Length: 225
Figure: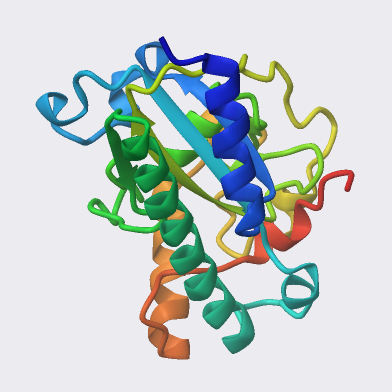
């Protein structure tokens, strides 16, 4: 029987060697099924979800004022590719341990209007103890704020599970002040997805970007690192 702690240690080492900044393990069975758009028969048999975070370049984010910059757009794309590469490497390592792994793309939206992918990376990350869902509707981490990108790998390899972080944004409302769409509200559950989506589409059209990105509230949420 493989050792769950040793498995976590070896997989975490692989991730950090490739530049990852955060690593956690969630109990997939505790996740709200509404945050998963993968057909049940696809993820059935995977009790664990590994969440990996990459700290975005602070210097690039500081260059954002009232719209995403070409530097941020390129950085966003390259980080997603790196995270997908880490997901593939980790999946290979897991299969080498004679277990199954299902890497979920870092940025593959299948429902743009509601901004949803195959599963919610941020909710997996929260369940894995990496942070909490902030007023900006993004994962907020203590060391990096929302200045991160995420990828998820589902697996049946025995792993030690982390506990969700029971925190919130407290009195911080800096993201509310800078949101160009006015989508961020006092309560996270009141976040206006449609306003956010429309603003992303506007940036994409006027700046000729092939992705719907913004980065303004990501820049504002700095963390304590």
